[in-house]
Image (cartoon, rainbow, N blue to C red; front, side, top):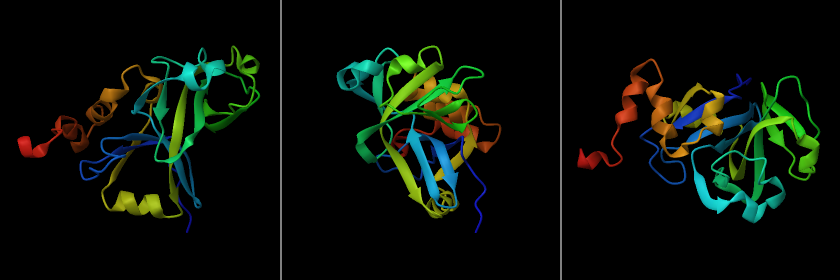
Length: 185
């Protein structure tokens, strides 16, 4: 089976996916192929400043300057997602799609000065084995939509789920008004 890649897309949790940690999550897919998928939840800011855990990188990250909860897997490790400036391929950066890629946090930050346009650091990630994500999409757990750079680096991650749904041009836009607790509707 050959999977059409969804790398660079967003997974938006449908209202049917109501269990933590994915309830109303928005996941940026960094890698997707026949072997599975890997992404980070981009709308879960933690209450922990980057300078408390990775002080060398604190000036490189965008506001709000906190660690983000990237997913339930490997939460004791960090992934840095960065957008590079035009026509750069800095040391320690690996392209995922376009100008978005992963930064090796073991590389001295000084080597990337001027090359990184924006960056966020995530504790953990979301991962799926071969065929697992496709099954979840078929079951109605996720919407797959196009990403824009502001989805990853925007300054209001708490409203991202609604904003991504609202900008869709089909019935999905109506779900942006879905109540937090439908029983209270």
